[in-house]
Length: 246
View 1 (cartoon, rainbow, N blue to C red):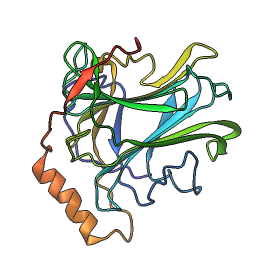
View 2: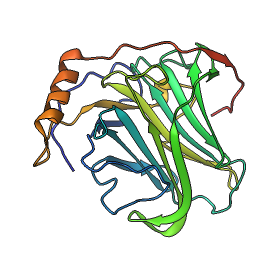
View 3: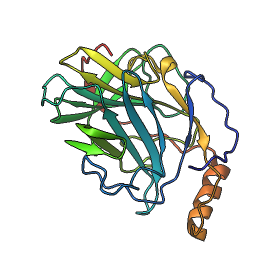
View 4: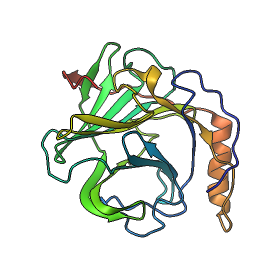
């Protein structure tokens, strides 16, 4: 795993839980399983509370700026429970807050069936009018867990677009899983709250270590992001939604 970094400035969020943004050398296939044993080894991988792991990486191998997320709850049951929730929360500018604002987003998969994208409105969440998130989950094993468990893969296909726009780090991040059978959350950071960006972890910056054989074009992408500093955020239309408490 790469260790080099550019020092970032974390303006909000829970800075006790900080990570780097690693850039993919192996494209993620969003199929709800480790397509190969190396599929997520180029990502930042960390522990979820109550036994599990999460992962995140940036993927530009297709020419787009894709955000790839992995959630593996080892503690959860293996039933297809309609109350189960997989959740990714993103604070695009890492400005924190006690309630989600317009630069905060939540990707939520309920019951292993429905994926909804929400945007903050200053006091809570509203359902986004457009949702192009890509996701898949399945009951399987993985290189990180040899007992059958849920593996959830989620992708924001274009962080520079208008659906879920995210600037360059620092960003806020929460990955979590709720197991309805045990009424327990497993999350990073531990005991974070999906409705309070101040409790989310921080993607402090991106790794500067360039893997051997990386293309000049990829290095140019890194340089461009460093120069720009942040990407323009675009407000999206929303409709009212009353969601879960966490």
